[in-house]
Image 1 (cartoon, rainbow over the protein chains, first blue to last red):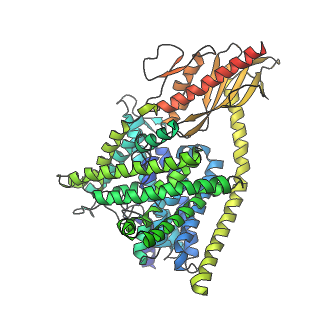
Image 2: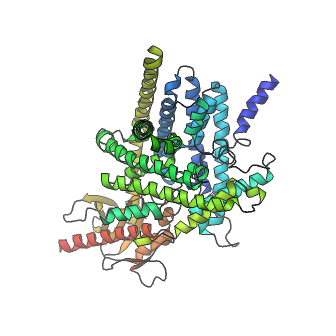
Image 3: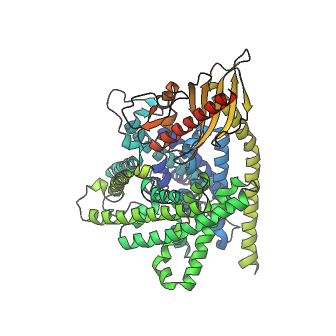
Length: 227
Length: 193
Length: 190
């Protein structure tokens, strides 16, 4: 019993630290750079994506034994797209401010590699309970990464954090941080900081990632090719 | 005519998909190490986006809008794109084997590329006509390819530099991307765009 | 046959059907809320741009630019017209920007509110700050507006938001349309 609860715990924390989807696996980079102009947006996107991830992990785990391999990918896509659309509609109705801030990146959650990768690598092979934990962990990791990047960009670029002015008299905000280049910079520096303090790094000259390029590629590779 | 030219120029330079809108980052960071692979990926994307811009436009205008099913656009678009990529792959394999061999491995990866779906969604959001939509898609993909190729050149140079350990791999790539992004930022205001 | 073709197709079909059904349900549930909220929002915008108006009545004057989505006469409590509020739609950087512009019967702009838009996240939303829109309060129907990037010298020069010139231009253009429309209405009446 102790062993399985340890495993449970590690599934949960996996997504936050060891395999943080954004900072370690380099997945979901598009929204990470695009909406992190404010810390608040980071949280909003993180929660939205976690919702989709949770939904899709649960459903895919539930039906994993009856989905034939041939239609695996279209089924995954449909499920993920379904939850993405639900989140889109719910945000539009109940949280319109966040909806407007995140804009086009909400429907783009469907191509967020994180969700597809977790469906392929975890939910389709594990129980519902574990899949829930995995989703929560990955979602939390995603949200935390977005929060960090978003906070850096907002504080340096606008002098506020969550809308509260924090650097009033210290320095003039560097607007570039909330413009596109700032996204790349903030992301780069955060990953650099992590690599500096990470025990696992050292000789890795390749991009520190599992699915560096793209998820369908991972799927194809793991599956022996037939897409 | 003027509108088309402006859309094209804006899509390539001013609001470059990768460097401005952050669409298509995954392949951008992963593929762009060698110029030849960058060109290959870019070519495949140009092909797919142009076709998908037209196809998704038709589906939206004649299927979703008249039937008040616009909320299904995300799910329909992504399935169409996935099917389109499959189709393109199959057709290419049969009728254009050398091209297929050159682009082959990049094709399946295009389905989950934010750029393709993003382009379709932007067309809907901006209420483009069919012509504008196709021009927009094509130009955006060209911009993507441009960024990819430029960046591969930058990365080839970086390879030979002495980089602090913490920055090796992804971080220095991102910093380099930031600089290229700044360069492209200079295009803002071009022709009053 | 069952395993290789029928079963996969069936499973896919069922999944699609269930998902589409779920989406239709959520759509139904949320559509009304969204519509209602949009109506309330618009009404609130009208009150915000013309604070001392008691009620608004929608009118349909002829010859108005088709960028104007709605014209409302603003009435004070004693029943006199104190101005007009227009819903204007202009083309910004990322698509349509919805504006609500209030102009009183002296031809002075009483307020500009930026509503739905798809401008650059974070940057375009700066346009909503009073620092930018407040400039329009010094504008009246006789002005021809232009956008400048710095060194604003007069009331008809609108200082653009740095890094959001197109958004600034679109908003200014929208206000101009509203001004021209009001001029048309009031002079047409004379």
